[in-house]
Structure formats: structure tokens, C-alpha cells
Image (cartoon, rainbow, N blue to C red):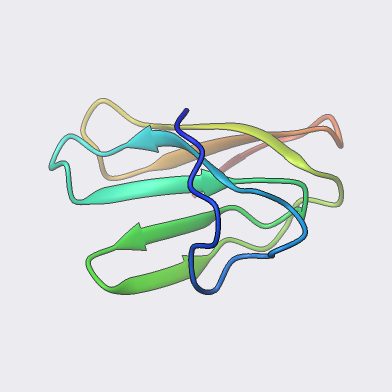
Length: 79
């Protein structure tokens, strides 16, 4: 992914990075060490709470309507 330091609303102690961009090119998922991936859709930043350890990766479904995240807590979550 691409490193985007200082993005508003994200944990400044954990440089977030984009791990997935939706097929529409307007939606992205950011992950980092704060255990909460964030979806940027337009101007909205939506947290996806549920992991108990840092989130390592994220991907969009082929249809673009679902997101899967993988965490260091050994879980994968479908959103």
C-alpha cells in the first residue's frame, strides 16, 4: 500500500497505509497498528471496530460491496 502520513481522523502514532482501493476508485481502506481499519468513502471516514490486535491487511470483494480484514489477532473479519 501507499503510506499517507497525517491523514485526519487516523491515529497519528501509527502511520496508516492504504491496503485496498475499491473498483470505483473513490473508496479506500486504511490499516495500521491501532486495531481499527478505516474506510474512506467520499469525505466520510468510517471505523471498522472488532479486531483486538493490529490489522495487517484488507481487501475488497470482487463486487466491491464487502471488505475483508486480517488481523494479528489471528482473525479475518468480513464487513
